[in-house]
Image (cartoon, rainbow, N blue to C red; front, side):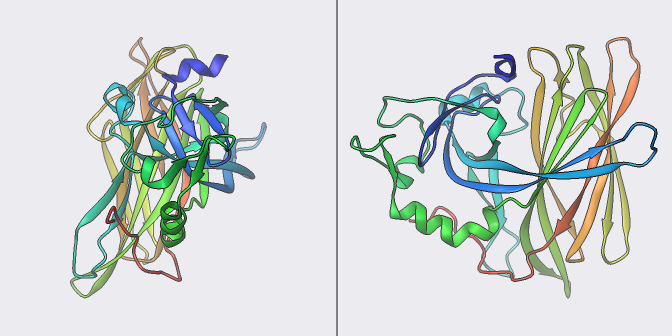
Length: 294
C-alpha cells in the first residue's frame, strides 16, 4: 500500500474497533472521535484568488505507544495536549503526554491478540480487557468521566490544508485558555502542523514566515530559521514532519497565515503557503481541563 511508506506502524485500539496506524510514530489507542470541517485551499485555473472548500472529515484522538517514541525521528517531540493551570494567577503550562490526533485516512483495520497492545500510562486506566467482546476492550467509567469533563479542551474544530508544489501543509489549532497579566487578558492557542512531501524529490525546510493578526488591530510578523529549532528534510523515505507550537494574543480571536521556504538539492528555493486559520476562544469558557490526578 503506497501510504505505508509514511513510516512505522503499530496499534491503535478503538473503543469499537481496532486499526493500524500509517503515520510515523502512530502506535496509538483511540480515546475519542470527532467529525469536523476540513478546510482545503485551492487556486482554480485562470483565477488569481484562493478558494476555500470545506468538507466533513473524521479525526481520532489517540494514545501513543511509549515504545515507539524514541524512534520517531520526523517529529519535533512526542505529541502532547497542553493546557493552562487551573488558577488564574498561575502561569504554569500542563501537558498530557502521548496524546495526539489521527486522520481517518491514516489508519488501517487491525486486530491484536494482546490484552495490553500498547504501553501508555492511561491505557489500563481508560480501557478494560473483556474477552467476550469484539474487539475485547470496553471503556472504563474513568475514560467516560475524563472525556466529559475535558471535552471542550480536547475537541477539534477545523483542520486547514493547502498544497504548494507537492508540499502539503496541514494545520490544526486548539484553544488553551485565558490568563490575566498586567491588568489585561492574554489568550493562548496551540497549533499542530504537519508537512508532507507528496513528490519523490528531496527538499529541506529552511525558513518560516508568519503573519499574526489580532482582533485588537495588531499585525505581527515573525521570521526565523526552520521550525522548533530544526530544518527537517522531507524525502521519499521520510516524507512527513510534524510539530506543535503556541501563540498568544491580547484579544479573544485572531488569524494566522504565512509561508515556509524550502530548498531543493540544486540550491534553489520555493515558498509553500501555510493556509490561513482562525484563532477562536471558547465563548462559554468552562473549568480548565483536569490533568493526570487520580
